[in-house]
Image (cartoon, rainbow, N blue to C red):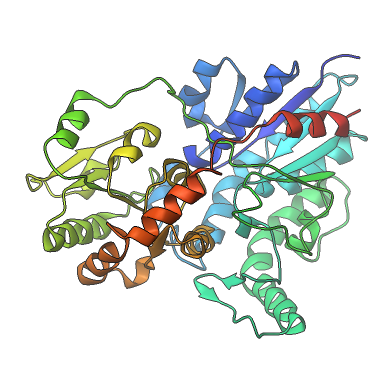
Length: 415
């Protein structure tokens, strides 16, 4: 039988790209042909791997949209920004040789287009890979509506109604017009509810996070495959630069601050970080590719870097203060580094809550961020024996996932 052609479709930042890249490499190593589709600006990350890459359009101006990091309005910004790229996926798949065995492995936001691909190519198999637990709808605990936890005593019936109201108010009005317009062009019936629709599209759903981080919920889609964090480092041999190594040697372990590589609206975050560290007498490393967000002159015990591989840096720091992206969270879990999560939107609130439940750190909502609150939260995390013990315990389970079983499951899907 000929090798399977796996088309991997992703969106978003490098943090979204990297887990899919690790899975794509594992599939290639198993003997399959793999093509990645993703934002065109990520081509330099993929090129060294030798994987075939098809760049999709991406408007980086979305990084400056004032609602990008809003707890409720951010989804609309992300959805609208990704539609031009996703609209190219059906044409790409339609252009593949008719007799070729093809499997789509896609980000959940590409599932409407994956369904269009299957309409044009009967028998096409689709797998959805979920990067974070909150991407999978559930009415079971732990349940957060944005930053707000739903109390455990709220009955399931009321939770279902809350979910429906959330979809009717925030998701369907944004997503369904474009989804149904594309379906009408393909002669397909309209969709009434986005979430109910997309969870039924995949032939297989996959969690790219382990059971100990988020246990399987009764209402998650089936069939479901579980795996660990597919941690990926684009430069696995990279060492710390002489500048960073020298800074680490010059004093006490610093606190590292990063709001995420895609965050160009973090000037206040870094102002609070500098003030909090000054109050606590802490050294700091500030990570951002956007230097303009920082003061022109930084205090002496502070180092700015546009990028440092977390794999190499985290074992040498006192704590990591970050936005709660799933990739950054997983890297800190692997390193056994205490975390202080400052979530803004999207999956970050749920990831922050799970960090707290594991005992490996704390959280402070970005909307409540002040220098004083940040300083107090840092004091709860840094040099806390209970947190340090939990970090060591969790790190024993947080090694990069063994992906051979997942590859076998995907290959059997396309038989």
